[in-house]
Length: 185
Image (tube, rainbow, N blue to C red; front, side, top):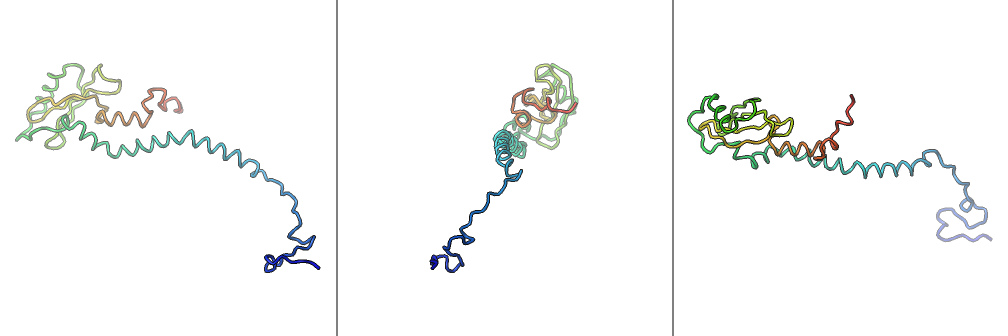
């Protein structure tokens, strides 16, 4: 007489020899996907370790771009703003002359008048004493002609934004860190 396991009684299983539940199945043949899967997972893991840190830095520095204008205003407030708003602005020629008296080197690249009351006029000079691609920008109080300072700038970008841009693009590694080697020519 065959004995039945009380646990398996409700499932229709039996302890009889040769019952379907006790027969061994032949080993399933592995497909090509099953054979390649471990290798692909390993490659994916190493690619993530290699690329992940660069994506993290790009994401963080890219996010910081959103607050660069506020950081610039705090760090360079002396150069960007005037102490007292006057009744009228000096003629642009006098503002440029004040900038040239303080910094006679180089040639004028461009002039940006004060966009709103309380801000300074920017006189950008192409000089040899700043990094290639940058200008020396002289900040002039449009009401008094006082020179508030001079900073190396890239177009309208102040040094803080230029520094973050360099970090975002090439991690401050110079030509080695830049993407110029990978451009299609």
